[in-house]
Amino acid sequence: MQIQSFVSVSAPTALEVIVQRVSDPPPSDPPATPRPAATIILLRRGGKHADRALELLMVKRGEAQSFMPGVWVFPGGAVDPGESPEACAVRELAEEAGIELGEDAELHRWARWITPELVPMRFDTHFFVALAPAHSPPKPDREEVSEAAWVEPRVALERHAAGEMELAFPTSRTLETLLEFASAAEVIEAARGRVVEPILPRVATVREEHRVLLPGDEGYERAS
Image 1: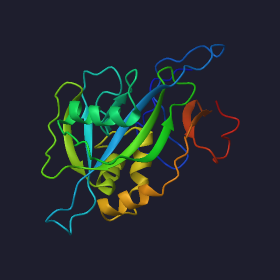
Image 2: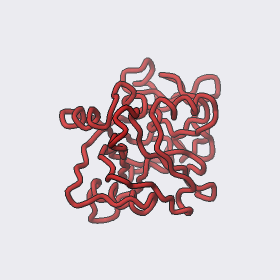
Image 3: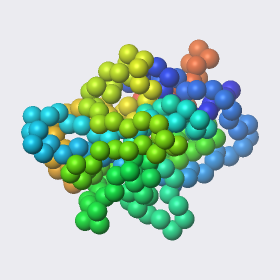
């Protein structure tokens, strides 16, 4: 049994997402310890375009990257020693997309995903939401990320379903949580009172395919 990364290679359903196969530790080995990580869901301000739908920043990982090449994600990465998740998210945003958040920028927790235990490269990722500075076009670094774009959550999910935009499973599920909001202000208001619990998916083998189960799903307690 081999698993590389926590990536959906087709449009996800509520219970079934195929995980790419490459390599996983022998069953006798303990799970890898998740590395702290952070990502930022940067929300575009409405500005003069009050009728514009909710848009957020997404970046496409470079094809030459060893981890999740060609996958669209929110800017983010591993937390450096002595760094807070919030500081990591701000740093990665500047490095990958060329957008600097001011010292008064507010980051709010939105989600927290932990990579399944069977995956050899694991992360404990904190998802934050924040407002983008006014007039801040993204500038991809052309190394870690090759493209950057403001995207409506609905449009990103539709493109994913059509096979036009590859998304990691936590990314697609996070986009789904944003569908009910019409503006960045609504998201920030909801984030202020949001209770964030860590989500540890598990992997079950069904008909020789690996499928991701979430807490509460049938078969979750029996899965790895």
